[in-house]
Length: 391
Ligand SMILES: Nc1ncnc2c1ncn2[C@@H]1O[C@H](COP(=O)(O)OP(=O)(O)OP(=O)(O)O)[C@@H](O)[C@H]1O
Ligand SMILES: [Mg+2]
Image 1 (cartoon, rainbow, N blue to C red):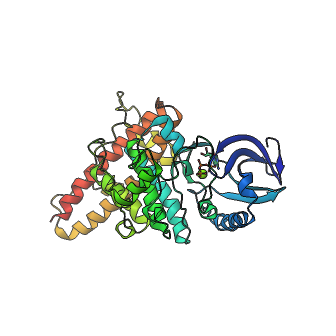
Image 2: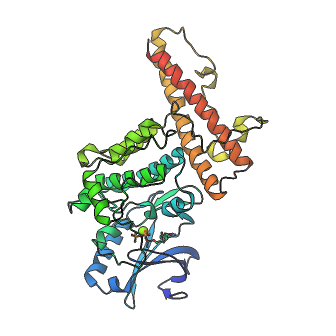
Image 3: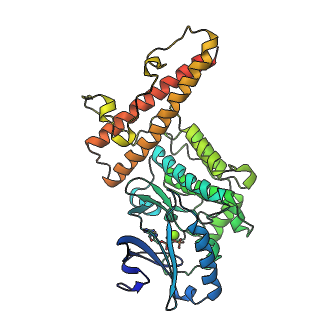
């Protein structure tokens, strides 16, 4: 296959293999940009009905233009071959990440899940369900952006995967109870599978692991997912609650939307949650420059217009009740700014941590420092919110 040209795309090297064929790195010769080319396995490509379903699904997938979803470029058929051309992702899948690193520090894992939920929420709003959310279909790019792969392909395949020798038993590990029962799927199905994925990111192990596929499937349907706080005491209890809710057997008991799941994760990661010990390397050196000038441009906050009235610099414990509403609004505004910054910081820290094998560097330390400051300020806001809310 190497060197073959299909339309405007040339195949350069194999980068992976899955249940539907081989994935290659290639190039769009016209635009001179890298692409990923998935060549459908020959035994599947001869099935005209299946190929037609792929074509239909590709059309659906083509509508999904979103930061957290890998973009589909083309669907081509030539000389009995059927290929899907998509955005080439420089980075690694969460499956590779789990294999090389094991579990991910909880704030990082939550950030990854929340990015996946952004992509899922966008697709669900258009009535599109992924059906095969799992670590190998979630890729983390080198710049720290998570992208969902293979939207709609599971639907087109309808269970007809080829079994390559030595293929790991990944297929049922992330499956929802309704898929196992052969029922219809909906957005709650993706929420369940993402719940299993997040469980694995947080603990290094999926909740249901057994020697036989049957036992894993049976556990999805009958066994409540075990909690993990006894093994992972640093993870806030609220995060465990979120994961277990996503893993409810009955769809009605799960989060009703990707947005709800994401918001609950955000709430559970709030500042009063314990610090993320594994990621935050306590900086031994004293800061020599002011935070505003040391934060990288992407995360630098514009100075708040009302900085002089900052509730942090001028707490108003004796303020009359009438001003409480205004104070709470100011606090809420600042809190949101900090939460947004914290989200970006976690992503940046995670990306650097992954790319540098944890060694960090000066910029990394600055990010850690800033992250700590943000957390401290958030904790302070939480205290003040309590004070102003209690009157
Ligand atoms: N767009 C892409 N950019 C870069 N690498 C990719 C891309 N798509 C797939 N890959 C790589 O190819 C591998 C195989 O992907 P593929 O989707 O065929 O299999 P899978 O996700 O492991 O299993 P399944 O067939 O069950 O979905 C991925 O694990 C990944 O390493
Ligand atoms: Mg895949």
